[in-house]
Length: 398
Image (cartoon, rainbow, N blue to C red; front, side, top):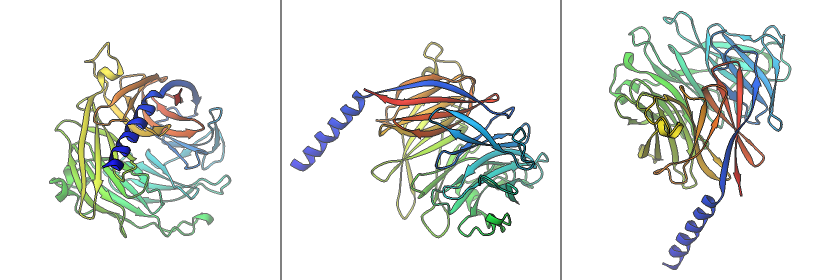
């Protein structure tokens, strides 16, 4: 009993100390990019390379980043290697992810003919390369999102589908364990498979599936796929010899989720945040998993509208992006909305009762968010609805 009481008092004191330490959140600068529309962004694990997609121009841009004094330099565009041009893609680049240990990126390209399958593009990120596009392969219909596991074993792909028998939605995975030949620009075909049990798990026909976003936990054990029109989260177990479907969490009808993020907790659980555009809310779940299945307990659902602007608490904001992270060891959520030129920062010290920590302005409504850890701070990088990247800074203050 004495030990239990001591641990309780210690935990209480640490909580008070953490809350006594305030945080700041502020706009720093805009970084110009040559793209007309920097819609999706991805970062290498060492924060050295930044990639941006421009679906309208069918381009991908590769930048060298300096986060000490935020700046971007266009490195290359493949091919040709003219720094003023971009990497042309066969369709609209919809998503991009960077391998955690190899100078390799994976991008999803959606064809202009929506009756055709999308493609996955493997890109060489070495400083100098004779040709950055290593190979392309077919994936599913209307690819929406891609994420690579922290150990580099798997890449999960969400294919939104078209609601037609000839173009069903699906979730697939690329086996990256035995990449060969990519160093010589002769990358061999990468095995790709799609989960066959997804319709049964969701209780839907394949033509009704609408997977749209993927997230993977930092420890690499768990993945989540949002199904927007199905109002559901599909859980995938990554601990075995290959990924397996591990359960589903149903969201309220009409929530139309657009984004999710996972944050590992010290007790082995995972905190999940979901942006629900249809209901103008953000939800937080405590996720635990055993050998049997994944369990997600709802902790809270918060109306985002008064958090964006308490003076206009009923005006639609359409939350479309959420990312979870830590500042000085404390958990926070950052949320971007379609109809607001600001990013909301929520304190998740008690995720059952999230508290508004700060708001910070961005140049334009942010389309995607990315966290960059720097000394004594976290940078929130936003891809905006214009040709600029905004950099915001969150840090603890005494």
